Length: 113
Length: 113
Image 1 (cartoon, one colour):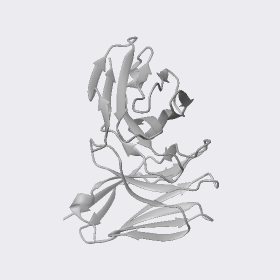
Image 2 (cartoon, one colour; image 1 turned 90 degrees about the horizontal axis):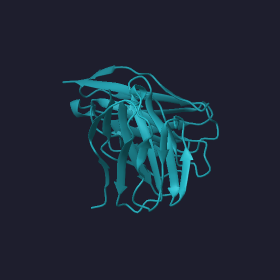
Image 3 (cartoon, rainbow over the protein chains, first blue to last red; image 1 turned 90 degrees about the vertical axis):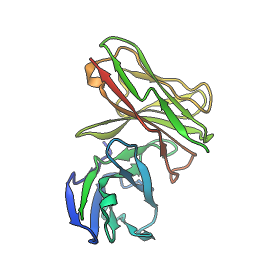
Image 4 (cartoon, rainbow over the protein chains, first blue to last red; image 1 turned 180 degrees about the vertical axis):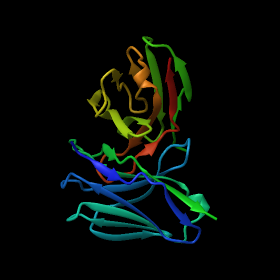
């Protein structure tokens, strides 16, 4: 059974701080890794994707991938109250085209002003 | 603008009834997916399709069926609704390839009484 694990939280950080969200996955064959943000009552929206080991930065967001440790993380710098949401880690799944995703249960982030 | 829509947005039905949830995308994406989201379980894949006439079972397919007669639509049918199928259902679509973003619809909240 392919699994994606995340701490459910809530993760609470003050405004302006760095929020660090972590995810581990079980399938060493996974090639693509995604972070989605989901506001309460809304649908998931993609924040970042990463394929290669190392860091990928986009504005205040940095995704980090370590395939040897089967670990992917999301750093949010200068956290804002508007970042308060549930963050879903997703990994491409075991199917012929690799496009179906396996999602973690999500980490709830709360940013206090 | 291209988009993905779901209907109805809210549905209340009774145990044993057949229910069909609609998903329509104008992205011209070949891949379409149905997920359900429940507290404590995160997003779980129900069925997916890689093109017209192609359908595949996901992690939690029992009690659900799909058919793909055109590129734009992937309706999800609950053959005989059960209370355990009370959930929020999300449709998503993507272009082929493991690294491509899945775009999510707004979701359908289904209650089975």
